[in-house]
Amino acid sequence: MAAGGQAPGGGNMAVGGAGPERGAEPPAPERVLFPPTFSVSEIKNKQRRHFMFVRWKQQQRKEKLALRKKRRKEREALGDKAPPKAVPKTIENQRVYDETTVDPNDEEVAFDEATDEFAPYFNRQTVPKILITTSDRPRGRTVRFCEQLSTVIPNSHVYYRRGLALKKIIPQCIARDFTDLIVINEDRKIPNGLVLSHLPDGPTAHFKMSSVRLRKEIKRKGKQPTEHVPEIILNNFTTRLGHSVGRMFASLFPHDPQFIGRQVATFHNQRDYIFFRFHRYIFKSEKKVGIQELGPRFTLKLRSLQKGTFDSKFGEYEWVHKRREMDTSRRKFHL
Image (cartoon, rainbow, N blue to C red; front, top):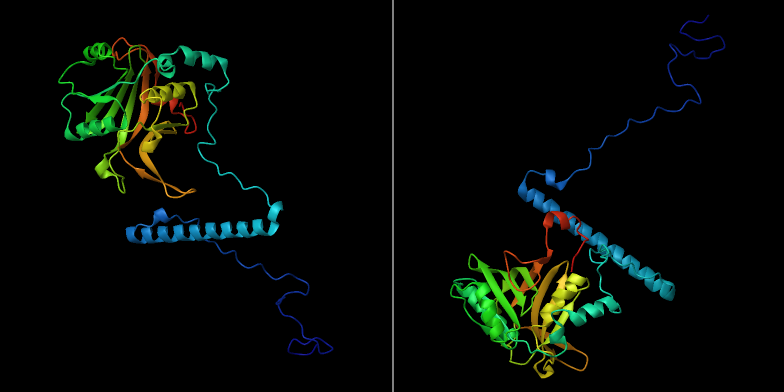
């Protein structure tokens, strides 16, 4: 045998089996392990965390805008063959169906409306006359709110209780032909509640009041409201309970609005919160209309509806808001 590890014939002989065999696959590369999904909230530095969050929001906004432009170009390219626009999902259109939703053609609803406590008003047998009062010893903000509310509701009168109980006020109101009683409650010098009692037979509604803004606190407000009777807009009172509350608000205002005043009082129900706004509309041209908010503004949340006039001890309640039992779903509304 030739020295040097050469095989006969001059071929080289592999020593120790070194070197890959022909046809064998190369070894797979090692897998790179990345860290798990990172959250901005894990950043300890407050300034760095805020910077990363702002940058992430900007990136999300850019992606959303790019997707919107892409869809718009696709719709323009398809023309009439473009698919209809998708309806966004909101809490309102995903609302849980309520069995008490009012059907305008329902005979039972029509019969109840013809015989309820508000039938004399809607039959034009009574003229609204409102008494507005407050809790005991009201502060200046509550007093100013009552005075401004009296300029919104025609034929309303503001009187201060001077410690007189509501059970004694109601018979006096009935004797003086008042049709409704409004009581503004306050806490820590801020109006936080409203009691509305329809006279003489009820019902009585108790509302939580929030987000009160007086006229001087509203930006870009219009001039002082005039004495014209305003128009009334009631939005989204769809259930039997909401229908009763809407009729109660409607009975505060006279039937025939004076359109020359161009003033509108709006009660807008959204997710069981009732937003009140008072506007004046202005005709800028034949096609354009502008609005000016006159104030005041506030938000109401129904707490209870009681049969008859105000009676905190022996009153019979038609409906009471119980948070733990009723607020089990964000898509469940009562008005």
